[in-house]
Image 1: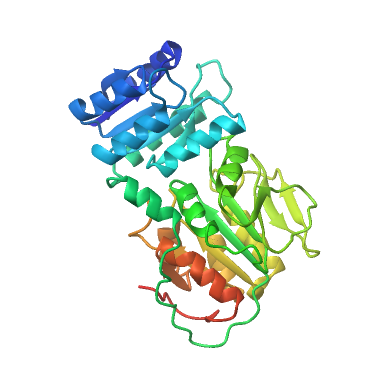
Image 2: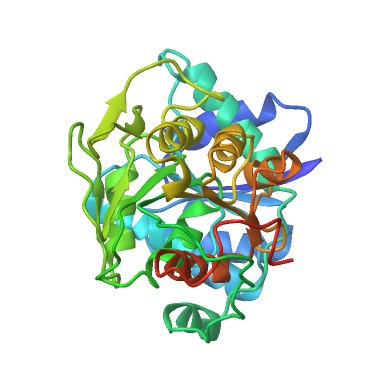
Length: 360
């Protein structure tokens, strides 16, 4: 049985979560807390496998509770939020920085049109995240994550690279902290644009871009249809739109059917990169559940692009990247801390655009 602790000061939300979780025979509710202080205490006594954590609560909010739990009794924490206000969602992502594993919209009643989808997503995440091995997060680790790290050993070149004109990145569960790790290292004068599809609950993309923009030199924003791609800019796919590019270097947004149960789809972005940029693109597939992006990364590699998959050891969930590796879609398989340096070296023509699964 998967033991779950519910933390929420809304009795309506709490009752709905109880109803939903009780409907699954694999899940058992071991405690209910109405604020962060109670959550910290119950996490020590009940030893849950997963915590569903609200953010805005009296006495102690979800960010502070997450920080304390991850420093003392680490547990996979799923942040549940109903607010999409940018100021509030920045706090949500601070909780992910403190160690929360993923973010979901608070579920609503059975009369809502997205009831079945949201309910299935929540139950799937509870089961998947219960298997995630989290580590103790201390103040030293958080501060160290923000400081420049010694550059890892360079990826061994096998030939002089060609020109890289664009970078595409895909991520899902566990992606925001890895994207933060990558973008913090990208210099202001980075000579190519970066396009990113991050699977995330609807309404949180603006908060994500604002959070990622703190302390980075890049211009980070949600992409607009027809926008011209500029060097040193980072473009995120908006909610419920696929993102690609056209031959003139402009953003293309599409409401075409979902791919791999996702819109935006990473595969859609990678396929567009392969079609328009071919060998002058680089593709990166990060942590996340499912297989979205794996076939697109393979297509990019077949067109001569540089392709990178995050390795298993540094991935929260080695689903998408693992599928890409199985397809032989990755030229390089790298830990999260090496990806930014590899991209910088690529655009500076210091490492090869051809090779086989280097970095292991």
